[in-house]
Image (cartoon, rainbow over all chains, first blue to last red; front, side, top):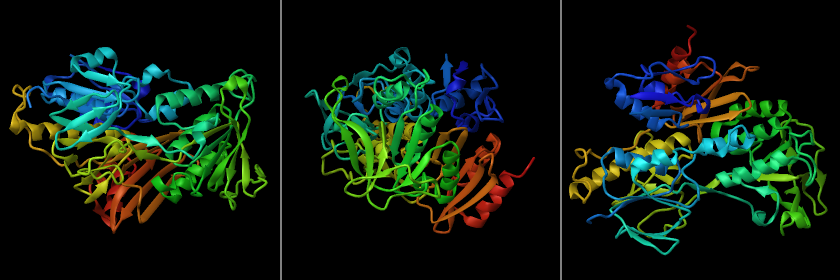
Length: 64
Length: 461
């Protein structure tokens, strides 16, 4: 799995951090998403897919 | 039932989420996605923000590219409107005359912008709900000035924009138009902007921000429009010159008056080159005329998002029994569209699984249907202020607002109903604190307990 972000589109909802806190974080100043792990281990994959699906700004793209 | 499709009606965020979830959850049968707009599924929140501002091109709003949609193997019918549904036979009628018998249907037709009588026949009066709406308004804002004059960007004067409606959409558009240098008047029936969504205290803080940026706030009801004859170059419709208020309208909250003049028949006039009507929306349910469905205010659903056997709804159009709040709710929030689209899809598949329709044999083991019980979330961006809210903020009978820093617009507000805290709104606090506050209102909580948990979640360090 490889993750890419279009952080420019981020609306700082923080849902990704709630769902996959080992993969995503938010910048302190404006809440914009930060990618902690662009190629997370298999144990994280379900959570990452869920975060990508639920992101209200379609910021997260997951590549196989 | 062999080979019947699941049809998703509505190709915006909720409909797309439903379609993707159906595939991810194992639906291998035909899947039809029907959208009345000609565009691929796109995102709506940026319409009143980045798109209107001109910062983003329309392509940036696409939720999926053609390549990203391909694996879904959709029967994608854009520019097509559903005109009827027979609930008993799960048969859709489309505006091209097609009758489509379905294994199941997910209704995600959203809402349509409300407008004012006659507004659609006056040039310069706009609504803002669709991409085409936003592009039309953006085009006018970008030209600026009077017809034929140079645009704002080229140094021309700003337009006189009157925004009718001071809810979330009107406020966001006002912020963008001010940033573009236009002369903006925001008119609302409520004296306080966004009061219905966030209460009067937070609304008044937003009012301060708008006034500080030069937006004129006016309280009053709109009685109609003044127009000038059509410009031959501008089509056949008369052109708006002013918004006419009902008598008794006044500037709100001590803003300087005298900006309007009085119409011959009484009632104040607000001169306007351009008008945005942002007075809310109505659920797109008029096409659902089956008596088996309750379409009183949106499509009424149970806790599983089911409106009838095999018929589910999601997004702005759905009013469902929220199991935690114990009453039917309908949200026009972006997050809810996706979450409810996913939930409706999973529950429909769970319902269909025991009858093992063709195409589902290889599906993952059937899941139980689950009540849809999200923590509602919405956000709004105005100037540099970002408002975020969890839970229920509208319809509160108690609001406690803490202004952490007035100049920086740092605010925290707790919203209650029937003795319990049910919602929290945040502006200007660190993301970690914002996330922690979500748990406080995940379910109604005794008021004092909620206050204590908020204090703990926002304690320094």
